[in-house]
Image (cartoon, rainbow, N blue to C red; front, top):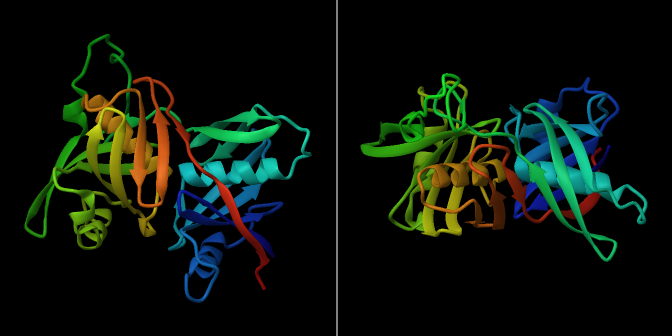
Amino acid sequence: MRFVKMQGAGNDFVLLEATNGQHNWSQLATAMCDRHYGIGADGLLVLLPSDKADFCMRIFNADGSESNACGNGLRCIVKHYLDGMPDDTAVGEIMVETGAGIRRARIYHTSGKIAQIQTGMGQPGVGRDNVLVSPATESGELFDIKSKMDYSLNISGAKLEFFLVSIGNPHAVCFLKEPVGDFPLLKFGPQVERHKAFPEGVNFEIANIKDRGLIEARVWERGVGETLACGSGACAISVAAQLLGYVDRQVDVKLPGGILNVEWDGTGEIFLSGPAETVFIGDWP
């Protein structure tokens, strides 16, 4: 099978094109993503035909579990799709079918070349019930968003306060006073991800607010471990920070692998921008 290795801010993927979804993708993901005996990646992206959008994307984590959302993966697969088009094709928007619904990607060109890919990540939800963020409830009453997001756990003798956000997949965001580099993520990451409070697992983010336009963060991804970047994680961090009044509607999230830009108007869809590059192409025997 011909594969493409891609990365977005160091969050790396193996990408395959297929004509149908009838395959044991989970087993293939664990084999291909293995960093010692396989190609090595955080996840497997599968590009499939779609009757609802330009194409369909399925995402499998390195442990074989399937995810509904992946911002960096979405940007990478859109880049790959566009690379297969003629050079003179100036596409302005691509629609992608995902497990979290139809997602759109805006394509910006400069001098006939792709300058930026901005992906829509849907409308965020908050709390354990994934309540969609909106200015008011159906009855017209405003609700306390912080109380719905706020959740705490005692883990290994430490009390961690989280803000729960859904970006099509679950996130537990923890804002720290100490530098994120000093936090023992390797110790707490697996415990938070697999805690009984999160029966389907959770992505765990730690973050420092630097100013109203910059956040520094690290991410422990469900089914993967610590990654150099996480697009949906950056969105979750930004949503929580904005709802808490820490940042403005557009913010850069600095992760170990690079910087992702998140834009959100406070109620509607989130938009994510960042790098997407092809690393190499090869054949899987």
